[in-house]
Length: 614
Image 1 (cartoon, rainbow, N blue to C red):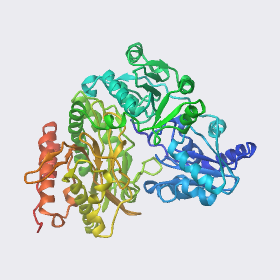
Image 2 (cartoon, rainbow, N blue to C red):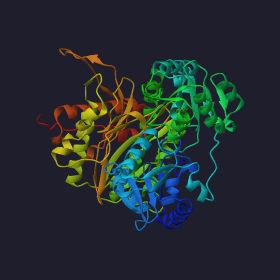
Image 3 (spheres, rainbow, N blue to C red):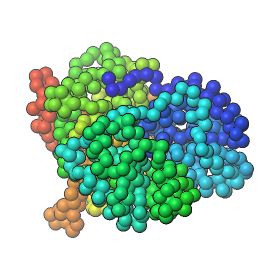
Image 4 (cartoon, rainbow, N blue to C red):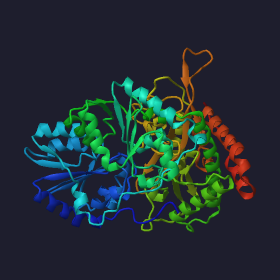
């Protein structure tokens, strides 16, 4: 199994470990310390060695920050984790704060007094984060103290070693472009930014630029490391060379000068001393890099990671790979949903469904000679009230039976060499209530609204997020997460910078892949989410229109449960979309199924009664 079901978080760890940290702070003249969820690369997943926030607090979510003071401690999480944090953290030790409404840089103004010394690890905070923290500290008279050594690493006696998983080459048939050509494009972009060099701190950018993949973090095929790219083409790669086979080493040596990670800081300092103008992404690069450049006489050029947009705008090989991956994945999900519908209510628990789904994906991959490489994230398998926990992670301690009269939310994804998938389906166990059906249909209306949207060039995710919420808003409902995140190509399932959300400031460009996943969550009762992946299509002229407009191609292929749809709440256009989508699902994944599963799919994709009046 790629997914384990150990207890997600242990609240009991907080008290003794916070006590150890406070002892260290007192001995070193500090009044507090900031512990982010991040590692040096600011990725969603971190290696076990870098799971400092979980080690200290018990909290296992993918976003959060703790601040430990001499007499108080706080943990900051966003709306996805407001329920989870209260089950994983000792609330006698940590007060819970909002990472969105009252982030550390804002909280600092009212909670840290004049002269207080607050330590932080400059490798774990971005340039932008430290700038905001410093601005707040200046207003209150507090002192931010960058530390040479992270105190968590000092007091964590059995901290795991850094990962050394082998690096593998990503074939050109899936990548669609040679690494040397990608690197040449990036070198040109660096020069246009007015820099002599750019530092890639995001392992996804390194994986994309060099056409390599790895396994240093869970569920995302990344090799941890850094790269310094030069406008003149003299690139350097900093990665533990124990990860390289002879073939990989020979390949990478043609693209860059390889170095061990321990040489990275010295290389940055040497370039800075030589007067280099080094581009750092303020949103991704560690503040430690800014310090190294400025302290050694270099110039920091604030510029986005030059690989982020090229990586996000998929080429034809990546698009074709994703389409193929979604056909296989849809067939695997259909097999699971057919099996699930045949099970007696109360006979299964959440873990049994996760296990069966992974088996289905493995089997389908073997049949099509495209093996399942990993799940793309820990499956969210939420029965009844667990479905209302947006980022619920099932464990042996929390696994719940799928009971009659409840909803079951299943959010899962897979990593195949030709594509990354992410799909959510919500199904009734037994007979759903009319409230459940109404709320499901409102969520479906929002998902269809995004699916059918046309929008002009330059549109940003923030400008269309409301489309997914309008039907819910009209009924006094909403959901506390973004509508969609970017998706990588056999890379991170949550990829930036593209997103559909109130904070989605990036333009949606042709070739970008995103999720489309509105939801509704009734605390203590049930959760609903419907998620497909979508692709931004080329801008086209509409007959009689004035401008060319983009649209979305739906990539995900699996039935949406029509037992939960109240067709009278859908417009004719929405009903036609749903029927057409289901016809396409049957046509594309039906040939991969047979017998009982094919018969089930034919029923699950049958047209709905067209009761709509408009």
